[in-house]
Image 1 (cartoon, rainbow, N blue to C red):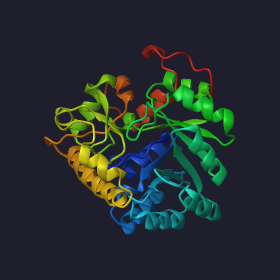
Image 2: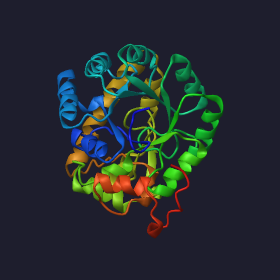
Image 3: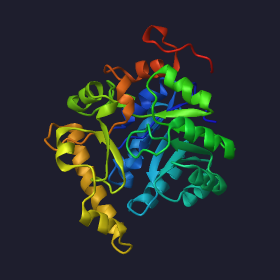
Image 4: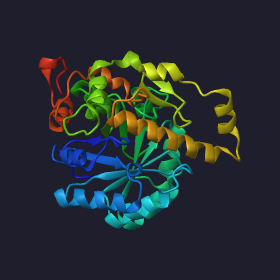
Length: 319
């Protein structure tokens, strides 16, 4: 579909994904996407897309949050269509408009889903592919295991299914393909890369902590988000308090509460990602279990797509 060497997308990661990482991924034979939310204005997003295009002609994409909490959604979509990115990944909302405009402009649209119901809805709307967000994903994870989610969607949907969550090694990559996935998205592994600009402490945490240290919190965006269970996360807790739950359920106030929570969480995540702070909140998925060192983007890709018997991965059985 995209003309790439390997069926892998470097996942869009809030504050983490940069044009430099995107270019490194494209040069490694995979594709990549970055969140539109990483940029405060449409002009900044436009400049970033133009920079990537000046470095390579290989396909890449942008992630757009399409629910009401993203007040810049329309402008972001306009910029992506104008620059004719190869694909747009939609998250947390109704992708109908993105799909319609994508088809007009020749831009493919992949939609994040967490269950069969949403997978069937986006297929009916005309999505080009489904991104099956499993319980192994980092950030806003799903509730089903990769195997259960992939096999269920493949049984009922005809468009390609891309697995999100739980890939660091070649064996894990092959497992997702054997379940029926047409490709995978990989996020957490690339945080621990030389090309990533987050602070050393964040990268070291990706290496140091393990799957048992990943928890799901409602304290940041109002939706469950997987983070490393740092002392600060333990201190503030992971459950929304009574007032937060009430405001999130109030139909009149919910939109504004979500917006305020997102803005507040963005500030916390930005501080933690780029500087040492006692308010340490680092997003990651349980795949940190298999991340043991900081590598180049190319080396991370090689570990995923090529058999590594010396590391205990089983022989590659699919291409």
